[in-house]
Image (cartoon, rainbow, N blue to C red; front, side, top):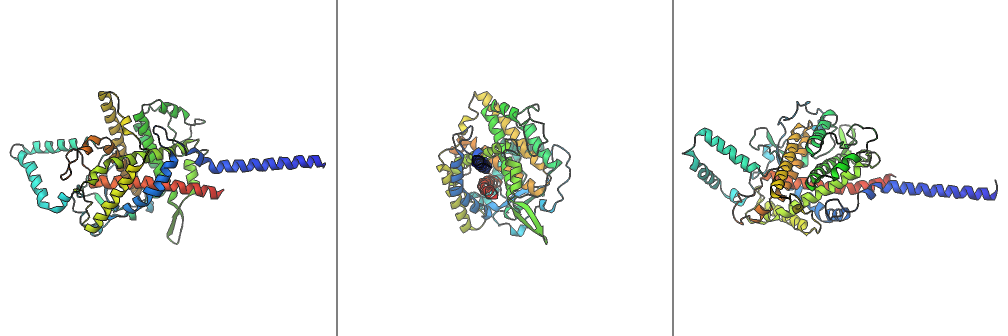
Length: 467
C-alpha cells in the first residue's frame, strides 16, 4: 500500500473516530439539550428552577415531610370507581398500603377536627360546641328535619364551589390514616389495561380535546404508525392559554409520577429482601426523545411548568399561615412550633423566587366568558380527582389522590387571592379556609415535584456515566 493511500486511510479512520465521538457526545447530552431554556407560557428558564430547587427548596421540603403534622394523611382507598366496573385490585404485594394504627397517630391529629391547625380550635372543645349550638340554634326551632338536611347540603355545596377536587369524607369509617414515610411512592408492577384506562380517560375525556386529535401517550399508548403526535401539538398551540395550562398540568403530574417510579424501581429481590433504586432503561423508555418520538422532553418541561404553578401557590398562601392564629397542631407544642417555623421559612423562599408564573394572565377575558371557562376548568379537574378512585393499585391510588388533591389545593389558592388578602389576623376566615387534609396534600404534592426535579438531575449524571 502506498504512503499516500495509508495517509488517506489514516485520515478516514481519524474522521470516523471524531464522528463517533461527536455522535456519543450528542447521545449523552440529548436529554439535557432538550430540557433546557425558557418554558412556554411563562418567563422562567429551567436552569434557574434547578438551582433554586436544589439549593433552597429540596432540603427544607424533605425535612418538612418528615414532621408528624405532614407525614400522616387520612384517605379513603375503598371508594368505588364512579365511571366503570373495577377490574379488581392489584394482587402484587407492593401495591399494598399499610394503614397506621390508631395508637401511632399524634393525639392532636386524630382529634378529628378538620381545621385542627387553628389555635382557637385547639384551646377548648367547649368553644366548638358553643359555636355549633349557635349555628344550629337559629334554624332548629323553625326548620323541619328534611329542611335541616337540605340546609346542610346547601352549605356543603357552597363550601365545595372553590374546590378543584372531590374530597374524601374524613368521617367515613373507610377513611384511614396512612404514614406516608412508611408507604413511599415507587414502582409496584401495576400496569396493563387498568392503568392504561385511567390515564387514557384523563387525557382523552378531560383535556379539552376532540377524540379526532391524537394525544401521544408513548410509551403507554399503542402505536399509530408514523404519527409522531405533531398534529396534537399543532392543535394544542391553537388553544387558549387556560386550556394549554390544563394539559401541561396533567402532563407534568404524569411525568412526575413516572420519574418517581423510575427512581424507586424494584431492581432485584433476593431472600425476600427487595432492592429499590434508579432504573436507567425504564427512564429512557419513558423520556428518551428517540424512544418516545420527541414526547419525553416535552413531558419533562411540563413537569417544570407544574412545579412553577405549585410554587406560585405556596407564595400566595403564605399570609394564611403567617397569622398567629394558625398553629400546626399535633399535641407536641415544641415540635409544632418548629414545624411552623420551618414552613414559614419555606414560604419566604418561595416568595423570593424572581420568575413566578403570572396567574393573572388566566381567565382575564370578559367576565362572563372568564367565569364560565374557570368553572369548566374546575369541573374537568374535579373529574380527574374522581378518576383516581379507579386506580387498581392501593399504593398508586394513595399517591395519585394525594398529588391530585395537592394540585387542586394549589389551584384553589391561586384563584382565591382576594379572599386571602382579606384574612382576619385573630379569627378563622369564612371566605377562605384550608382543611388539614388540603394542607398536608399541598405540601407533600409540592415535595414530590421537588423530588422529581432532583431525581432528574441524578438521571442526567447516571446517563453520562452509563455511556
